[in-house]
Length: 429
Image (cartoon, rainbow, N blue to C red; front, top):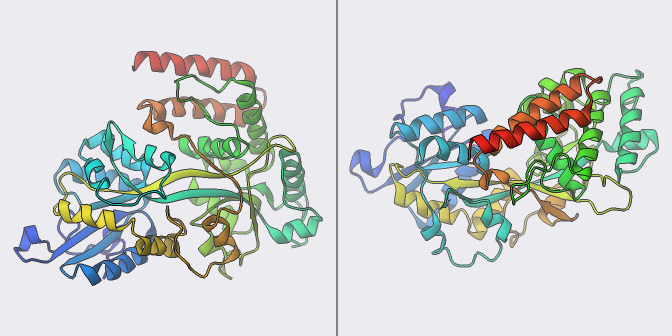
């Protein structure tokens, strides 16, 4: 039975989270401990993986513990540095990078990957994001797809169709913010969009989605190291995004991270929002949104241009070098890329990197499973530039100033910000 919310339960486990392993008991059986941040659905997923894996590996048991994201990062760093690591770490690639940066104790899985067999379902982009500091630090398990969502009943109430471009989206945002799209008899108690901005990744993530979704790549820096924030297309869309924050979201959105943004969406207060492949299972439930939303590509910045659903991340599995059962953990990590394991990945989490399986899917799930709309991949600058989080923080600080103070000269602000970013890079490379 998988372990959920270990920190809250206070169970009598060893410091690395395992109960009994071959190393600690001398027995032939092995218990692998996995740490993730996927909550109850992640625990259920690892339960199912354990049941499947044990059919051919009766001596191996897999348990999991789930932590809030920030706690997962902190505990993982501490555990690897004190030789109390779990066997498996599962999370978004950039969070595994943070652990590697602070510990240098994530295993290089390059050799193990070559023994998997057919991996033709993985693109060059999928594989590029697995590498950091000349090591393959994760096996890619789940592409993180993010589409644009609009409340279906709200569209019907205002007599509009799904927005294909920014002009249409902004017109909807005005009606959703000022009118009565939820039909409760009150004007102005709803919002055009649900966004987030509290942390650098929150705000820049939203810019990534609107930009890449419009075909405008490389939000802050391109692969050659050139700063892009003052290129005409980039500057234009950022100015437009600043306008969204100033006019069509709750005033305290500058303090919103994921949880607060979800409260606005799930509380029925926002007409348009990001829809991740992991959201639909919950949002289709009667006590949440009851499936009352349409999914599509992000609006094109200009009418008639191509626009996309964004592959905005990759969740993967890593194995600490000081894992108690490292070899067994690597074998299980390889198994997570098998067809049946990938089927379970989509069933429980809503995403995978393979699609050669069949499941009964809801219409919203099918959007992600079968790529109903064109896809574009985020460029994952964290894997190329170790200083990227720092320059993202500089950009975030400037953007918050522009959002909260309408008197700010945005052109001058962005010019000054580019100079600050270039100075930082010069001093740290």
